[in-house]
Image (cartoon, one colour):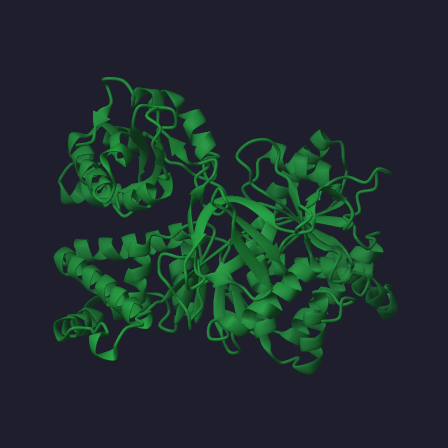
Length: 615
């Protein structure tokens, strides 16, 4: 690949060779309207001219503060065509976080989704001592308006636009992505054009069946998350059409109307889909048949995996029993086909990232005809570093390293990564005070061997599949010296639909315990089924019947582990953990440190006589 190229060449070449390729789709009152590669590039160029006319220079940072939308993607490419560096700001960011990103990145231009976010940026800019230009994004009808930038950019010549577009190379920064750390200020990860482009080109061949020509996907993850943007570049390379959903409240309706061929999600999305399917079955009196359907799908998938990896004599190979085949056929008509129809009817694959998905759920979806390919990566690896692929999958692992990526395990079990997706380093301001995001503006370079220390603990099996078993810092060591990985226990607890989040605690304590929160939708359904009347979260936290039900979930989570590793007590928090409360990251992962700090009294209570003992 030409090192003098950059990510914009992917679009420029496609728009030239195949301008009629439907690249995006914009939702309107009449459904979804296609946006071709040629039309998209035309809109990108108009905005890029406006940015250049407003004074943007190559390598200048430009912030984007917006929910996921077509406009977000349009702005992203316009920044790149103008030679700039995109600085995402999560749509849920607090004013102090916005101020920090503006100050640290030095962004002098900010795109905002609406007037409310414009006011938030104005307040944050005052706090940061900056005065950026703020451009309002409008996403109505066929596409964003941006009338001010359109008029401003009209005098900009094609030659000047091309000079800006081609000013970047694979080795220069494309984006400054701030990590959502649980302590201290977020650090800006320098993601290069090569990280996006080479990673995409390397990934498509092994995921051709998923991210291939004529595919369709709905993007609902935050585009401020590097995973979503990395996959968008992959879709550009694979010629996959993307629709955007900024409000997950309409997600199921949008999935049904758009009929995607694959979905990209995080574990909580798949947990919610399963819980909703289970709740519908129970509300129609089909709770027991659905439970049997789940067991059948899981066993079907487990046998498929055993058959795929069997290496013994053919006569002894695992077989799917006739009784299981018959049950699978019946349950496909009753439940599995309806689930696939709810998800648009064309969904062939799903990809799950950001954190671990319970293998039980992965087996269920695969057994129901929706294979979920789990992957692994960090912001610092431009997201995907390993992934299960259609031709080679093991449920319970995060797959094999992508082409161009090397993964190894350190002596202490830490996962180390080197490869095409590994970032250039953390952003550090130039000594001369300039804020252009250059490749040498690195505060913390990688070790000499090029391997990134991830902080995750894992193992690689004989077939090269990576499993993540925990975090170095999350590992619980009880007062008795027992090492306990909280992740598997938390996954098991979240299998219970009534449980929204679970946080296992016990570091330096005499035993392991857990904080639980309740799913409000499931609580309402539970209250109806058990004739308890309406219950608030606070009331439910103390209700004997709710706690008894949760005790069974705790007992089930404890079943596979030793007494020393088991959850001895639990507390139910009277509130939810959310993005807004600051207890979840943008990828819906629990910020363990924040939760245990904010609910320190509840944790302390687990180690007094007032706690609830798990059997």
